[in-house]
Length: 160
Length: 295
Image 1 (cartoon, rainbow over the protein chains, first blue to last red):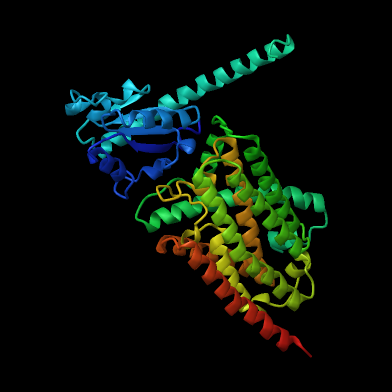
Image 2 (cartoon, each protein chain N blue to C red):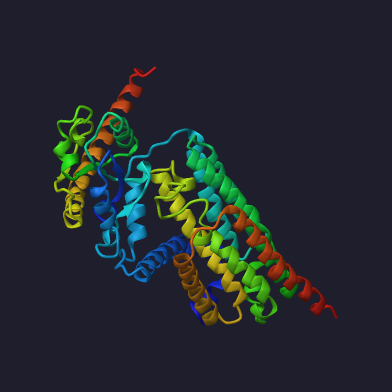
């Protein structure tokens, strides 16, 4: 229940034109003030809960996107901001473009727009919060299940 | 009799310890929340709710814990334990010198935690943490020396019950301590080792590689530390508990103003300015006091 009140985001620019990045930063300014929802822009995947990706992912950035996603501790959600991140946009046909973040990592919320407006980015992140809560329940279930399995293995001496 | 006077005169040491261990993180967390709210208002924003630091910490407790190696967790737990121990020594009325050494030990464990992982950001943060410790430690020891010169004792409870106004004897030491307090509270001109605000050359500095429960322990450890540092401010005004509380709040507000108006210093400037202030205000105050107190 506290995930809803303190989601920390990490923002990565996967070869975007910087339009959406400026709008992401704009939603942290006094005008929109994302921090009033407890949202902090941490530049650090190990502290983050929400991964905000902009830009059509290409050959040189897809490994970085995957890396950041893997470094984030569970539970986590991914928000694709801008039309390039959702589908590749006008760059979709380019030879080096993979076309959207969901070709590399699973995406939970798509925020379209070129560039996406701060209002819709905030809406997308607020929508991601519900998914984050659901992820927490799944994560807890998986953790107890893993612990149960491990206990079982230990009881029958199967793990050595 | 104010609650603070009641606490100081409490004889039951176990009750005192329980009150401190329970109340300090609550006060420290509220202080951090008020800090964020006031900072936001100074920047023309609405700001997060006052209880936001508690939400953050509770969230961190339910996150997955990623541990790179076992020394990382070990050192952070030692940092937390020694921070609580330091505060307990202080608020139970122990020896001020022992408090300072235990505080340094906690800081060393924190820096070791930074060195125990491979991330270059953690390493830079840990190196800067050691430089900061080198900068502020002389001044903090001078605080203890000055208080001893005036009251004739290192015991915190005796200093807190001293009738004379310590601030009038030790104005220079107090100014020096204020300078050092900015480093210890990790406020802006001196937030070299780690910073709450990201997107800088450091990422998150020392705490870059820590996640989940470990990060929550670091946060709570800092709340304990902040309460201890404000407690030292109180000692300067201990002759009147209302004045003491007012001084703590006003000076914390002053630190927030400094946090919002200064850019980050380089480590050379931090080191030089702190030692200069230590020599100019702290040492000079103690030398003058030495000759003034002679019969």
